[in-house]
Amino acid sequence: MAYPYKRFRELILAYYDRHRRQLPWRATKDPYHIWLSEVILQQTRVDQGLGYYLNFVQRFERVEDLAAAKIERIYKYWEGLGYYNRATKLHKTAQRIVREYGGKFPRSADELITLPGIGPYTAAAIASICYDEPIAVLDTNVVRVLSRVYGLQEDFGRAAGKKAFGQLADQLLDVHRPGDYNQGVMEFGALICRPKKPKCTQCSLNQYCRARILHLQEELPIKRKKIPKRHRFFYYFLICVGDHIIIRQRTHRDIWKGLYELPYIESDQVPSNTQIKRCLKSWGIHHYQDICASDLKYKQTLSHRYVHARFFELKAKNIRQNAGLYLINTKNLSTFAFPKLLNWFFKKKLLILE
DNA sequence: AAGGCGGGGAA
DNA sequence: TTCCCAGCCTT
Image (cartoon, rainbow, N blue to C red; front, side, top):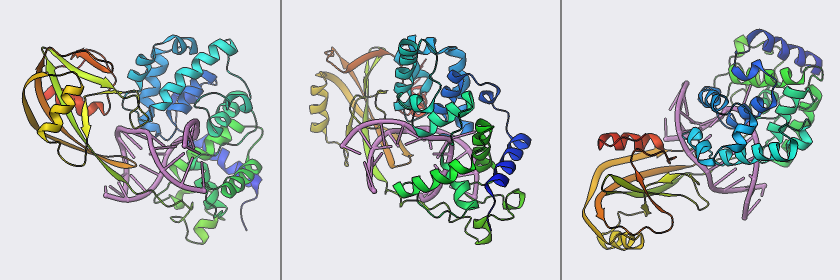
């Protein structure tokens, strides 16, 4: 047998009431704050997003402040969080809330989901938490908990799986406390029914948990096969012009879109001298001295790729300003791709960033 | 249906 | 190293 839906509800709510973490967005039902927290937490751990959330609510107190802000400033506060597309959508949605909704968030999940950056999960989360709409959220925590407790061996990545989990979730939902119930399942999934080494001995649902009975805790939920990682090699140029350096903004559809970075050549091999010269010329740099390869090599393992970086330094004079290339004072504010690396690099060069 | 989009923590 | 995280969007 498996848990009756009613019993599941009760146990989840009991767990949440007793063990939930005190988090700043749990002390409010203000849709602006809930929305902010939910977007920040998309594919992001609570620990990692918490500081960003606090910065945002402090710097942008109301949705009007966010709507009126320059996108560069929003990027700056988003710097290092990843999935930078979210920052763009955050700005767009804030502006639509102010312009089309008079600063008030729409109250239904159906309307919320039409806003940029708000999908099925976020819409359901805001509607249930802020307005008590009886709608179940489905995030990775919920999918994991349901798949284990009810032994649901469907792939949520497939249409059939979405349907199966959706139906189960709808029936389990506590319609009287939808917000608490939703957060309760997620909290339970994050702290007890974890992906690895779930705490089954402390679990208040271990009695009839299908996965535990069948020893399938580590096998569930069923996942799609993973995508192989790709290697990418970036050869960056630190070009000093007096006390300025040259940066440019990534505009094409690719990783780090919208962020600033040093000019670079992407290639599987170390670029040759003639290759470098040709590139510098295309960037409007004709006069320079001392191209020296820095001994700094950098490797970063991201979710879907390996990033290898190598640096060349040179001094230039009389550069021609052309589109897409910026001269900035090294003290200036910009939003960088992998900022930690560049901060470290500039510090080493005794230049100060910020 | 599949793939792109990040950075960090944990094992 | 690999896996995973309060998902969304485009193709």
